[in-house]
Length: 252
Image 1 (cartoon, rainbow, N blue to C red):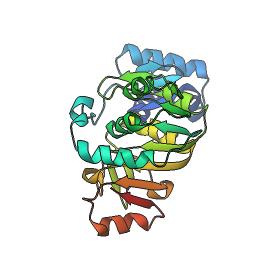
Image 2 (cartoon, rainbow, N blue to C red; image 1 turned 180 degrees about the horizontal axis):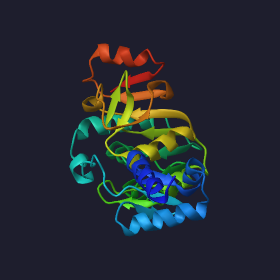
Image 3 (cartoon, rainbow, N blue to C red; image 1 turned 45 degrees about the horizontal axis):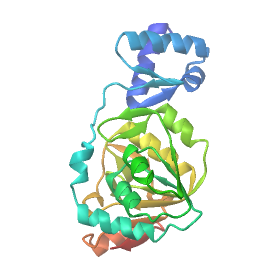
């Protein structure tokens, strides 16, 4: 493969996946990692991608996230009720993940000051929990997305790889009985995918506006979810469709 063809393929791969690592590109195209780094440097100079620690990330996002401040005021009562139910599933000594969703922030705000370890990619969650003396907070670091006040990208994913937790509490843009859990943003989806991989038990916190919705990029199938906590506005037939995948459902 000619260098120009390889670089076009690299751009297509980065745009499809959101981020990619040097080592993986080296294996895919059967060239040295140094060759890949030169390709990425050239593509960054041409404005076709952005270099990151250990790889590259996409510049153009096909789907943009709804700004955090706008999401913060949507379905507040439902999110607070879901957060209170989620707290009932957290016990002293737990090691948990909270993502960068507004529902996870409501969960953080509702947590009592008990012995916990919380791993998060959210600035707001980390700041909220910084006021609890007994809660140890670990932040992933990574590329900061101002729209969601969260860290994403290869550094965030690599940080998550270093841990194993008992429970992950995540939200999403859509939960569909056929298409699984989805997000509007590929970089967020990759981080949440990694969170699911390192957790023994996965909780999805999703209000009725997200149920039976399919968004831009897939995170996981429903058989990878252990618990759904949602509100009372979800029709019973939709709940039954979700339970068929072995998901335990709590409506509050």
